[in-house]
Length: 244
Image 1 (cartoon, rainbow, N blue to C red):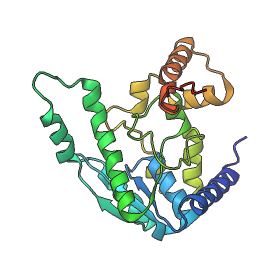
Image 2: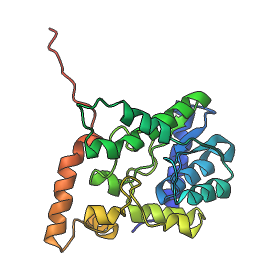
Image 3: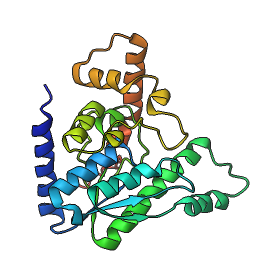
């Protein structure tokens, strides 16, 4: 049922239209992790805008064991890129915490992606660009993103596409196989996404698209995660005063 070429071409046209209306002549700027999502978004932007209008930002936090994949992507696409190590910024915030305020494990885990996004926006504003969000529908559905980290951006090519659909587009774009099929690691605690989630992306994608998942426990977990994390995709609640 998924027409990958049509969807890929429609997405490319959508990106072009976005930039015509929201940044004519501006570059697209994105964080490059070397995984499928940033690889596919970068390749879509190259097809839509040209390699000269796409900028990748590589942001290791000290040593990054898989950073070669990020270099493979920017070299394959021929895009301009910058390497900005965020280790000092992360450690600077952590070391500034007062002794009587122990930082929680959740806060410690989510600090690097938030600093990375601040870095991408700093690059984007420095070059007059627009920031590409790289989240996909599967991750967003169960809240597998960091609020005010990788969950934000100025435009989002993949947020209505599942993992399997994103991978199909990556292959249609001619991306190297190892970038499209790279086992996703959360980049925060070193586990695979599927280890953390407790179900596979294939199961999640099928459930999203068809509503079918035979394993009741996994279905209940997906539903619970979806309900718990809806707030990440919604606008901040605002008080609406009555003024008349």
